[in-house]
Length: 247
Image (cartoon, rainbow, N blue to C red; front, side):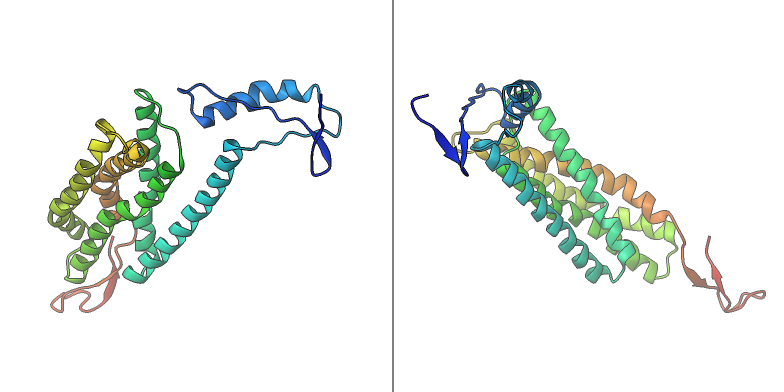
C-alpha cells in the first residue's frame, strides 16, 4: 500500500460494502457476518480484529437506544396503570395486550416485505413505542367497565358480559379510526411519505391483532381466578350475612 492508516495505534484497512438497493441493511449485515466475516478472519493475524462502522454501527446503536426506550416506556405504562386501577393484577391484564400487539407489528412488517422492501429503520422502531400507548386504550375501557359493574353488584361473568356489550362500540370506533388513518400510508404512499410507511405498517398490524385479543382473550382472562368475597342476602336462612368465597 502507498500509505498506512492507524486507528487506536493499530494498522487498519477499511473495506466498504454497498448492498443492493432491494436488500435491507439487516439482511446485508447477516450476509456479511455469516458468509464474509469467517473468510476475512482466515487472513487476520492472531491479534487481529474486525469492527463494523458506518450505517451498520449506527443501526446497532439505534437498536440499543430504542430497546432501552421501549423498556422505560413499558415500566412507565405499568406504573400508570397501577395508579389508575389501584391494582397490580388489573394493570398486568392491560399490559398483556402489548406482547400480542408487538407480534402484530412484526407480522405486518413481514407481510409488507412480501410486496416491497420495508427495512426496520428508526421511524419503524418508533412505531413500536407508539403502539404501546394505542393498544392499551381498548383494554383500559374493558377492564375499567368490568370493575365498575362488579362494584354495582354484578357477579364476574355478568360484569364481563355487560362490559363487552357496553364498550364494543367505542373500541371498534377508536380502532377503526386509527386503522383508516394509517392505511393510506401503507397502501398508497406518496412522495415524501414513504419514510413513514414502516411506522404505519407496525401500527396497522399491531392494532389489528390487539383488537382480536381485546374482544376475545381479555374477557376470558377477566373471568378466570378467584371471584372474591361476596355477601349473602340478609334473608338467607342458613348463612345470613356470612361472607363466602364465590366459585
